[in-house]
Image (cartoon, rainbow, N blue to C red; front, side, top):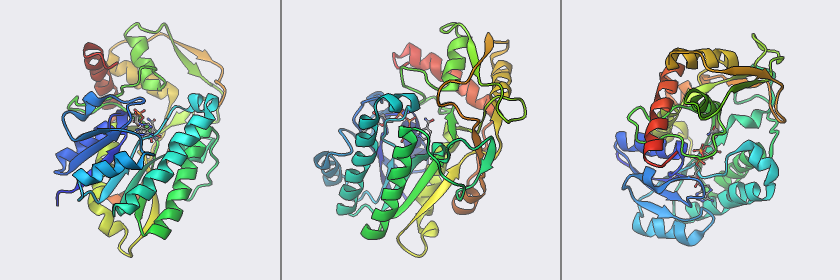
Length: 334
Ligand SMILES: NC(=O)c1ccc[n+]([C@@H]2O[C@H](COP(=O)([O-])OP(=O)(O)OC[C@H]3O[C@@H](n4cnc5c(N)ncnc54)[C@H](O)[C@@H]3O)[C@@H](O)[C@H]2O)c1
């Protein structure tokens, strides 16, 4: 059944990809984004509202135009870990206080289903091991703490307002929409893939393998890279499965979204070089402040509740990221 779905942060990297997955699944996405970081172009003519999630007037305006919205996917956030260390007030205000206002306004408008973009960073430095949804949380940056606090708040508000809410803890999203409708839009390349692409294209001199003495199979950090398109499909799947997930009524669930297998930084660089067709310039370096050994997801609960597991490979993610970088540059989106 086709549903109207509000996507906050739908002008950003992950939100815009979710919008495409929802459209492909026959749903009608409606985008709310302040454009503090995103790009309106990525909403591609869909209903788009420019405004802040904390502003009840703009959220109410969305519901006046689209009273049938029953589900919100909440991606809007400030999301750069080192930036959060320098700007904790902005991060708590935007991500925690903003989400608090949003959840209240959504509940007032009868929007009973909330899918929240959470993060594997809530698990903290886990020593290179697999984590399940029951693993101990230990957020190590202001950003990660905003994600955990928002989860806790959402759980409490779900119980009180009668919401059905799902916190999806993303591991490491990479790549771009295979149909090239969207991809990474932030100007400041902070993610490993963006940096690899920049080194390969000559925009950056060298790739720094930061941290080579972690307790992992080759000493470099381990992560769980999940193709952003697979991630987006998980959201479309979740929208369709809320009745099944919450068969007993209101509630709150946490689901990890990862591949279930880790990849080390060195393995990742090798995979990138296979796609690029030649070696890139790289150098070993000490860990940066705040770096951790990393973790990878148990994907069992995602399979059980959403019937979802990623299907795209790391090589495909790289190929899509490289193709998108060219398109973004050509269109002034990079
Ligand atoms: N990219 C990752 O590696 C990663 C990993 C785990 C979780 N997440 C989460 O996924 C979500 C999306 O991340 P992304 O990588 O697409 O980031 P992004 O910066 O590309 O997108 C976030 C979007 O939210 C918008 N936004 C921010 N604050 C807003 C506000 N107060 N009101 C309205 N719009 C606002 C921005 O303009 C931007 O378009 C975030 O919640 C992030 O915490 C991202």
